[in-house]
Length: 295
Image 1 (spheres, rainbow, N blue to C red):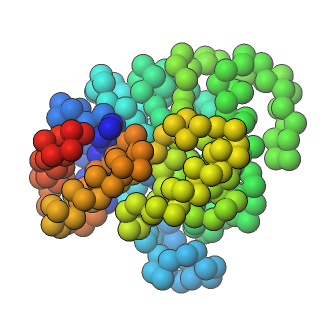
Image 2: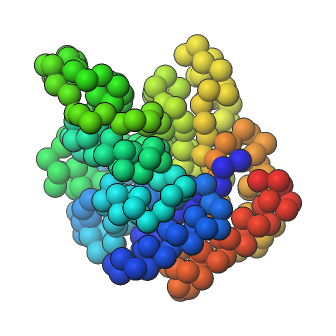
Image 3: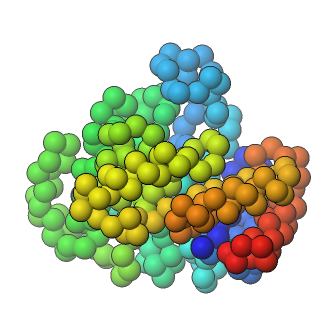
């Protein structure tokens, strides 16, 4: 099991020294990866109530801070040597695909191949609007975007004609020197699960209550229908490092039982502790997981 820790966007602030210390301490503690999710732009609550986004209360508004992940990881690449950087997730359809290919390739090159690109389709229509992207076609676009990214990363000249992309003999030199895995987040509906089974290297199921056995079973069935073995798809589960240890220990054990290859420990989220104290808590959880479960 590969263990990671989340980047505490909400609590870490803007001091580059604190950001450096957090990443270096996570690496020194033996974490395999550091994950960061994103929002480029937020909006007021009344704007987010205009469309049903699946939340009773919007989880993030205009004043919730987020560091841009490609910029963040470029900075941290020079300050670390081993830890992997993971977008968990990048809202791919609201970004221009060729530019994402270039940015991801550059982070991969500068970090020595330590980038894993987790992508998703997002929920914030106001953010899509601010970026000039179509919110309503995002699910249909993302699979084509993944195909374009992989071609741009592996071919010096790309010609591609799709529903949303037209490329005529273009390239993004320098190409990444290591493969960039593409993982996909979310997945509750049939269409999304089937898409992940077809095109993703890994899956980040974003369930609110830990392991969902029915969801795992459905994904296994869709993998078989796509001609893939169940072991060909990595799975990244997650636990919050708060509350009763028996709760998160049981959740971590269940992720292992259903075949998860990665487990992320979420820190921060307004606990009131300093980010380094939050990281100390995650390090202790990591120690318990190693002792109790062999993770």
